[in-house]
Length: 257
Image (cartoon, rainbow, N blue to C red; front, top):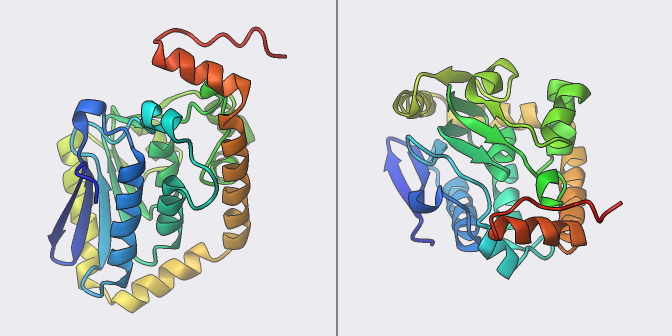
């Protein structure tokens, strides 16, 4: 498993902590693969009642590590990032997220597949796919318009507009916005530990019933988004955007029509 992931166990709670703060917890292929492995094992482990995903008190994740992404872009539904997406999508037990600081790209879209989400008020969430010449992923093009309405979803997905933890809670993306990172992590842990006192099969059956409507449609959309995302990674627009990012300059899309 990646050295940039920490796994902690406490009273039936498994905490998966992103641990690459010097890179703002940017996600590498090894981290995706490791997270998928942890989730798959936790789903089979009867002693695990819930999983808490966090990046700590100051940063959730800045999204994909662009250098790692450019070196080996995801190819097909068996790539490391899709292994993680599939593991979280199929996970049968409750998943709780504690979000502080930046939550960029998949750092936001993965929250749509968690059961309970707690954010710090100053958290900074953003899905800048179009800014990188890419398209929405992980079912966000289906989930967000239904959750927020088309107009607000268009601001987030077509303009790549960011939003705060307070807005995430107000819009139903998160359960609650807390004062700071410490309070957020404490609240998420408190709620996740509650599952230790509940009947485990009743909880998993209830989650399955809640997720069942539209599940196959969502699975199909995730796969369609993934295929298009892979194509767009090879597009001139994405090459320009990612090159500009690495060169720390604004992307120039004026040549594209």
